[in-house]
Amino acid sequence: MHKEMALAAIAAGKHVHCEKPLSPSLKDSEEMMKAAEAKGVVTQVGFNYIKNPLLKLARDMAASGELGDITGFRGVHAEDYMHDPESPYTWRIDPVGGPGVIADLGSHIIGMARFLIGPIAEVSADVRTVVKSRPVSKGAKERKDVQVDDVARILINFASGCGGTIEANWIATGRKMQLGFELTGSKGSLVFTQEALNELHFYKAGADPRTSGYTKIEAGPQHPPYGGFCVAAGHQLGFNDLKTIEMAEFIGAIGGGPKAGPDFREAWEIQKVVDSAIKSSASRSWVKIG
Ligand SMILES: NC(=O)c1ccc[n+]([C@@H]2O[C@H](COP(=O)([O-])OP(=O)(O)OC[C@H]3O[C@@H](n4cnc5c(N)ncnc54)[C@H](O)[C@@H]3O)[C@@H](O)[C@H]2O)c1
Image 1 (cartoon, rainbow, N blue to C red):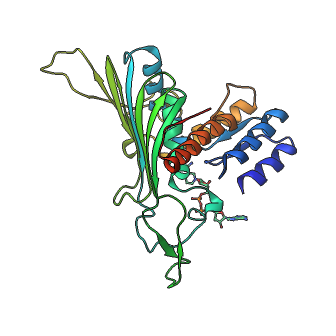
Image 2: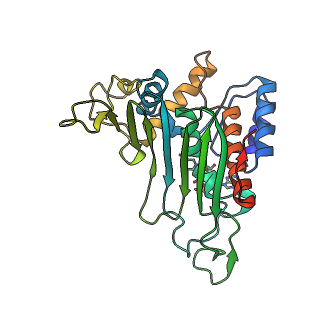
Image 3: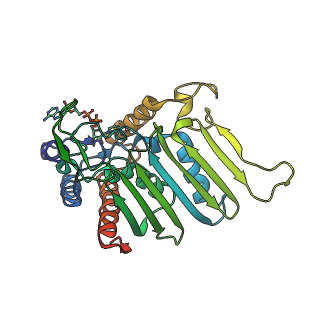
């Protein structure tokens, strides 16, 4: 439904916020991106987790050289809403709605990797369906074969030369929102998980070994726009606050403010990584991302 609604809105000259992933196929994403750019409307796609002020801090620390040379990225987005083989068929399982977890959750962690480090140049992936059939509806005896993937494990090489891994998994029994990463650099490392979204853990290399270790950076008004929600640290932002930040940036961009993003072009770039990982898994080989 994203494509039909977005194209109609763009044709009417409207700015468009669309949920992620932008579309089930790369071809549709490209069509949406081109239509939006031709019309000159502002677009934004719902990769809300990178609106966390601590993610912006992480990106700034990586970009400024504070972490030294970036040497590795280990990213994961794991949840368990599909772990039960009796969970019925929904649009998420219908291949018409997309390729599976690699697009549903993988798009978030791929987007986060690109946000933190930059473009991904090539991938080698294992994308697999673990639950082979599901009931056609809740409690039904009749079952339908599953054609979309449940787990995607991807080796990635960034254009910068840094290597890494990404896992997308919706059958990770027990995991509710493990969207996170470990980013290592020659001078320091960062660790983040959405399960504790007000914390960024920072290890600074070269400190006194007796007292060195990961430091917990707590979100506070020193990390804009946290201060727009609360004047004191420790009170914490939540998921819906990230959605509010996202919308404020979108509306600001419409009003002539800074570019909001991730826009349709960035969502198309993310979709390219998804598409390449599926191709890599099918061909059992590395695939370069054009
Ligand atoms: N950004 C995020 O963190 C995040 C989180 C969850 C879902 N999403 C995205 O949001 C979108 C929706 O996911 P969801 O989990 O809310 O799905 P959902 O299945 O819970 O909800 C979809 C809703 O759309 C309605 N619907 C379906 N077809 C319709 C039609 N033709 N006309 C009008 N309504 C129709 C359904 O009745 C249902 O209420 C997806 O793109 C998903 O990837 C984003």
